[in-house]
Length: 94
Image (cartoon, rainbow, N blue to C red; front, side, top):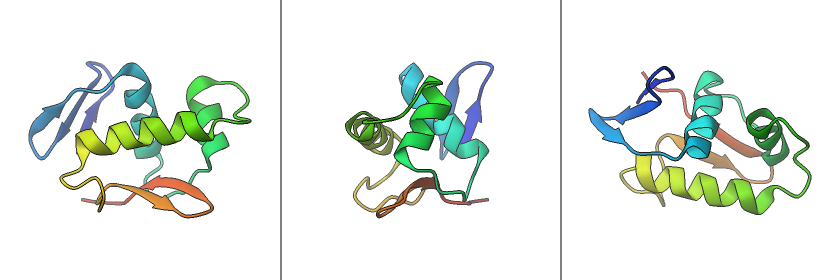
């Protein structure tokens, strides 16, 4: 997976993936911190720059959309992982 912040393009396995601005910003934040698990409020606060209280549904919907676009099988993600009861992370990959 390659993310180009200048052009706002994301490429997965050589194919460009179309993301909304919010999806791009969430993915970029998680990619910049590969392997680190972030709670829903932490993701919200880092992307929206405001308190993340009550952001569960907002983040869950965006994560689902990102997975549908970047994963071969969104139900068995290889990049964007959920750590139940804790949050989300981007798996370290080469």
